[in-house]
Image (cartoon, rainbow, N blue to C red; front, side, top):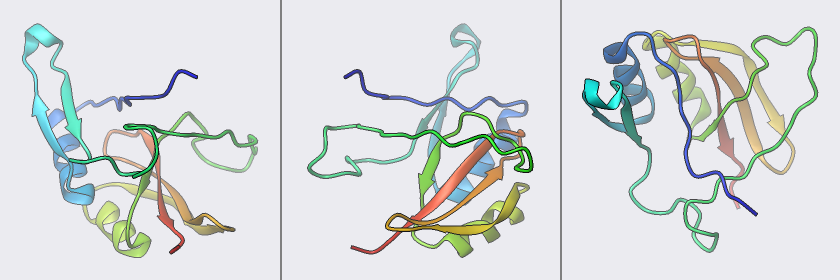
Amino acid sequence: MNPVVHFEIPYKNPERAMNFYNKVFEWSHEQLGSDMGNYILLTTVISDAKPGEAAGAINGGMFQFKDDWPAQYPSIVIAVNDINETILKIKENGGEVLGDPMLIPGTGLYVSFLDTEGSRLSVLQPVSK
């Protein structure tokens, strides 16, 4: 298999976008210069988040398109400790939560959101094991 090892999120306003992800998820960033296309590197974790799994492994899934759901695009899911606290941070920092958290049996609480740049992502509060 060929693993997913990176993600990218488009931005319109770099300062606003970096501020959002730092304040909501505590991610650090490194802004590269114009010679690198003004790319921004994001660091989300210092050590591997899934001990026992292949280093850096990111798994995924597919969902059925539903006519009445908003913003159904490819997305990344970010694990959080407290989904309600994260929802407050998303709203306080200019994001928009898309509905109420839903329970995914055996997995955890899940909700999608739009960041300050209009990108759709999701957060998941995993079930305690």
